[in-house]
Length: 478
Ligand code: ZN
Ligand code: MN
Picture 1 (cartoon, helix red, strand yellow):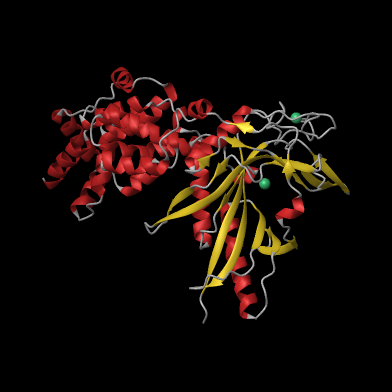
Picture 2 (cartoon, rainbow, N blue to C red):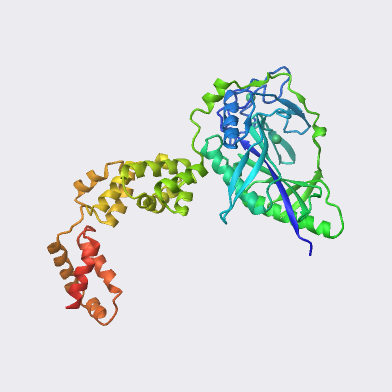
């Protein structure tokens, strides 16, 4: 059987998280607002209105270009992309065509097997978003709130080979966008949108069949499903001796099928020409340096450094660098702790991460500061409190924002290591539980944990657990 491979390129539209739109002062927060409440003459395309470029759009685009190792262009231009659709009031979209802000670049993609795939980036350009249309009460209605919301469109080289790789690309892109703080990148809210260009060829051959473009996919799972389906469809076509037509396809999430929208338009159809109402974008060295002044260490670099500097396992380093504030939190806590980084990592990945996820907050919002976390681990290490008390302190500190040492001394939570006190509590428990003692002696040794629990209860959770266990075993032998 003939072997085929897929050749996939992705075009992503990234919504930048600026406060105002790209060419006017309207708020970008019209997502849930009543229709047509975040508009003005500029973004609703009234004749005579003039666009003015929002500086922070350029700044965020430059940050993205840097993260993609692109050539950042000192001069770039806006162009008009002409097409008619009711959600586009001007009859054209202001975009960048042949001289975009960023050219070239790449993104490294660690694959689950450990291999790293380098995916080329062709270009990234700034543009305005269009509005939205919907059917309601037998009418076609239009909402211009989203018109003029800033986007960066980024186009990869056709370097992706499988739907799995396409999914990984989107996961890593979303991580990067949030890391550098330029987009919330929530696909469900349309802040990260993806079109996929898919074609196939026989393995070993360089001749490509025509490509199709899949639109309207709004989750990473849907992108993977749609690409998988399209590859299968194209193989069936080619095997049957038919030609793959250059279609634009729409993914129907509900039925999991692709529908033909139209024959694919070519760039000439858009009649691009320079936008006469805007100046060229001049990015001089001073401005560019200022934008990149505090450019952060990126996730993959940070992961490599964590592995080397802290000697933590690969799994930990990956999880600790998924999100930037969590990663910063880890590093600050390790420095405060001054001990084995793996120990901090364990506390973070289990208890602190659960706290963050349960409450849907970021590590930066925790009242349990990295220094307090380090202090709690130290209290447990030194035996000042036992491990269960340590864990309960996490929530207590998070609730009150108090220094853990203050809570321990005020509430008398310090671990009891006094062997006489532990021994007499153990003896009491055994005296009170003759049935369990008999069962234990008859061979039900798993009851030991239950006895430990009873002693803990009696001593309000403060007994040293290992000492308690030891004393109980000794007494039960008698
Ligand atoms: Zn406006
Ligand atoms: Mn576009």
